[in-house]
Amino acid sequence: MFSGGQDSTTCLAHALSKYDRVETLGFDYGQRHSVELQARLTVLQQLRTQFPQWAPKLGEDHVLSLDVLKQIGGSSLTEDVAFAMQADGLPNTFVPGRNLLFLTLAGALAYRRGLQVIVTGVCETDFSGYPDCRDDTMKAMQLALNLGLERRLRIETPLMWIDKAATWQMALDLGGDALVQLIVQDTHTCYEGTRDVLHAWGHGCGHCPACDLRAKGWQRWRAAQAA
Ligand code: ZN
Image (cartoon, rainbow, N blue to C red; front, side, top):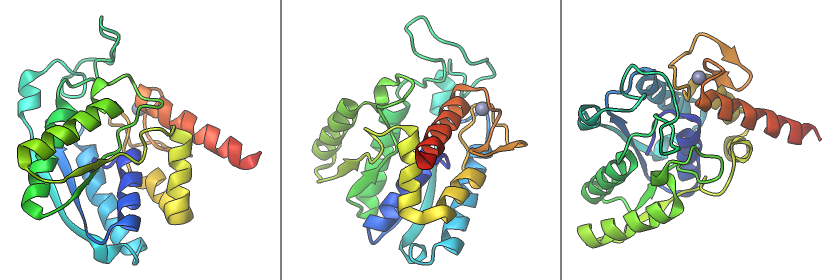
């Protein structure tokens, strides 16, 4: 599952270093900022040209339309409302059911394409409290998919128990400086869709929660490297 952000790009590199055939899947769910979908294409192209050891394993790219999420509405990712915390303690970037739908569709695609592992960049470590990113949710979805599809699919979550600093380190371990620089320059994480400023850690507004997490992870990682 590949959105074009830092986490899913690191997971894609993980998959390419581990498996012989990797296909990518993204979702167009009426994100306010289509820069994410553009970033996916740039990252895929850069991976193909800069990493000849991975290029032959990188198969088809799929983008599925999920307008239904926008129809349900209410999230700052799909509507023009400012980031805020909800009464239930979750940020309003939470799109209820999003990951559950994503995984169901990834399972259906895996079934059709004869794929056995779904790799996703969900993380419980320094996440925003999204309940659909939890390890228990992943285990429950894996069980539901295996029962409902009569298959042995595995949901793999390489980032589940590591923080953003360790995610940068994982990128370095998998693809060296070239992969770190590709992630800095070509992936997109910012909730505001801003790409006009390039910071050491990448493009973004620098103050939304996604930028904040990414920037702090970068700073902790660089500080640990220097120590
Ligand atoms: Zn931002």
